[in-house]
Length: 131
Image 1 (cartoon, one colour):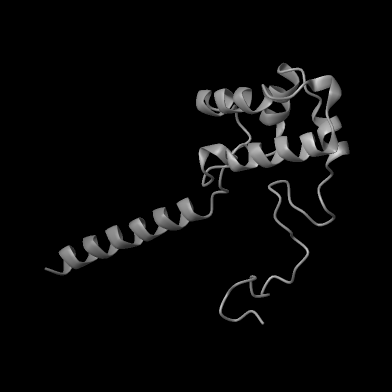
Image 2 (cartoon, one colour):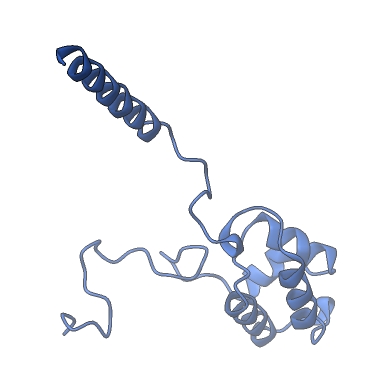
């Protein structure tokens, strides 16, 4: 009987150690992000949507309003700023730097368009604790 308890105790300790060693390994970048937000290649559906959005514009004659509309439509389609989006824009004949110059992100805005300069515990607009 005491031998059984010792064996169970040793098994429990080894399981706990294994779980702890798994929790200390660094997470892979983008491992918990949805596919549309990773920095990998765009999906075929995203590429098709991007082609559809860009088909309404001429790369060499973009206005500020065009740049704003393109960036808004890409964001609404879940195509976030990043290297894959930039590569797809260039492949379609558009210059990502020109889009950014025509419609720059506000100071403190993250690549996805969210503001990052508010205090971390500040209530979000429209929340019950916001004034």
